[in-house]
Image (cartoon, rainbow over all chains, first blue to last red; front, top):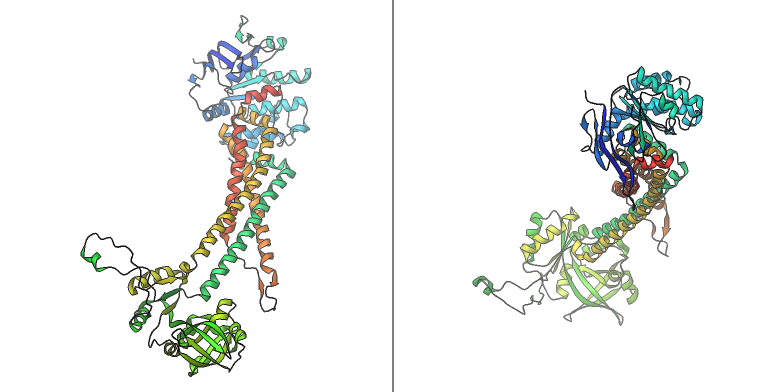
Length: 227
Length: 413
């Protein structure tokens, strides 16, 4: 079976005056329905690896295959379309568009995709938000929501087009412990109940310990901790 | 696409006051451009209309443009002849009856033949140089507006026969004559005859009011000792803009110099072209300046919304989606400014058209600014406004679209 996501010898070097190596020769496979933690000390290249896997950034060398397809020859537009249908992002900060309500924010990826009728989009957005416990907050703008609520809206938006892969960059990094726990549970349920694959960058080792698999990075290279 | 427009509109709406300033900037540019174009076009049209009304559309004189074709040129394949000049013994148009018959056969319009000669008009020891113009009152009436310009007497008195003459009011003043006085006309060949003044005209053109005297064609022919001669045919065409073609055909057939009104006023027509070039340069400059306002606002938005750009890219928007969004923001401001500018331009033009003022100290000519209403002006001003808005939006848009979302996300965390 082809892996959902496969990285081969990924290297990312920032072309500054003194070149900075962010990720060095990383190869890994991520299969469907896995809940993977990427851990490592600050500056070890965790986030950089996640952005490469999420096709937001292009590697300096090496290749990334999504469902067996090589992404290197893809144009900017093709990469954008792949992100749109295959990948949902959740960041440390919610990154919602401030002028739009919670429901509108969730509808944006669906509208970009343009497959559903406006009515179906609305129903689907409300369904996802309700499932995440936000049934009372459809029409609130981000500044009227708490941090935990915003982060759940961000998760709902990541799920809008029902992508098989969700990438999270420190999804609980800016939340208190109660909200953190809520969001973590949601991510875990995505894997166990909805059959998604979730890859989360975290520096919280307790949280990483509760996930299926851990990828440990040191100085941009894979360390032994793979288990 | 709707989605991109929706997001773009929230960006613009989020900067209400700045957007308003940019829109007003474009509107003022478009409005003044329209008003200026209306005024300049109006002045030009008015001037051309006066030219067309006053001047003959084609004037055929007994001059020739070039020397006659030499027999040697017919015989030999290659000839070089130097020093040729057109004949300058001016006897008038040869065989005028045939010429006028030919003209009346095809020219779409009216024409009048006349004999124009230089002479002197004398009265009690004073004298004035004059163009003595012999005309047929009936045909002259059809092609010249002079009939309308009489202050005393009338043009019709010429057709009564006898030795009548009508002169410009300034000439009469200079000579000290009035209606009914008898003056002496002296031709260049020295012949003198007495004429009675039966009319005074005022055309508004000093050279004519001071120096023209009209009499029957027959009298002018006698005075200049050129029986049956004419040396001038003036044509009014039904379509003034056919004058160039008509003049070319007449000149080719008759061999005499035929000048269209456009040719006669070539330098003025050229000046109009230069004026229009200047005007549209100014219009472009004004709207370019308005474009800076748009550049400024779109540029500010792209900086302010850098995070949104990153997040939208992560959601699956492409570089060109982002570019389109910001170009649209610029064009939307340009379009809003254009529409507001149309209203402003219309109002300004209307205001200019309704200003009345007295030009002549005598109070005779109350006039108003000539204004041309043309949708072309609105289209041109909007075109410049939208083009400069698109460029002003495109420059920051291109930069914003190139941003690497990862850099922005890293900067934010």
